Amino acid sequence: MAKKTICDFDLKNKRVLIRVDFNVPLDKNLHVTDDNRIRASLPTIQYALDKGAKVVLMSHLGRPEGKPVSSMSLTPATKRLSELLKKDVIQCSDCVGPRVKDELSELDNSKPVAVLENLRFYPDEEKNNAEFARKLAENGDYYVNDAFGSSHRAHASIAAVTQYLPAAAGFLLEKEIKYLGEAIQKPKKPFVAILGGSKVSDKIGVVENLIAKVDKILIGGAMAYTFLKVQGIDIGDSKYEKDKTDLAKSILAKAKEKKVDILLPVDHVTVQKVDEAAPIKIEGPGISPGRLGVDIGPKTIELFNQTLDTAKTVIWNGPMGIFEMKPFSNGSREIATKLAHLKDAVTVIGGGDTAACVISFGLDGQMTHISTGGGASLEYLEGKVLPGIAALSEK
Image (tube, rainbow, N blue to C red; front, side, top):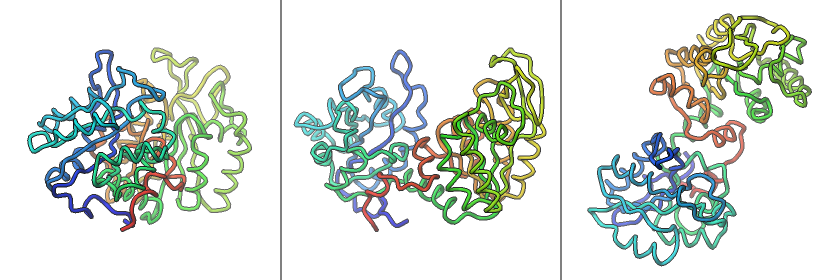
């Protein structure tokens, strides 16, 4: 990796300012309902502590629109972190200013970790304001970015702060760069991409970048209907993007030119309305009027799984159907199960819905890597330079 990592710093008796992603879901009683993002930050935090550093963490939570909102305080995340670390953690009243300096002066061996208050309580965070970043930098001797999920945003705590402190990647960010980067730049062949989700427009950049690199692309989810439509296949009442039909045609033409096979569903799970209790019918390749596709059908699962049998690198971004509803989750589950049992293959799962889908099936432990960033992993797969990675110090 060309960028510095936390291992390149001598942390003894230093204060490390770490950008984490504690943007976690809270219930109405302000309890953390999913602590995966907090757990994901633990190896970097623990490493810094083991090396004799004091740790200052910063994150955003929700969209407070640049002003303090009590329900978006990081206090619940700090409480959960304290339980996981089995240590007292200082919750700061703010993220910059003299009061924070006083609070951080209490960092010692019995309380070696502090969490700054929500960065987005200040509009300057999202504006990548240099002066705000300078004030944040006063809270540490070194800066470490371990928030891949926010690294596609040029915000003060991600980009501008690196102008004031030596900057490196944490273990989580390093892992994301390693697996996503290697999958794109140095994939073992055959290289197969699985794309799903609702819109072609969300994945245009990804498809265009991957056509030059992959051997095959499997397309499921609602985005498949736009591609089927332009091939003259009846899609019934299935959702498709009318304004993206020319784009779908050009993607199919480009894939043909590059000798990349694009495999589309050959059958579908269809219903008359999106409702878990709706009677299901398997149809294909066309869908009859008045019905809409909600998942890939059994023949498509078989076709996709046969293609995956020989794959050595697989990137999956976007579910195959409405996986949140049990009757329409089978396609995504079967693909996830196939990936979990692939021998000697690198399986990389894009963040967001795809990660949620794999986790919901209990198969997350059997994938090579599950990205922690939805938008960030999409942009990385598009080949874009992420501001949070570009800003780190070179080795």
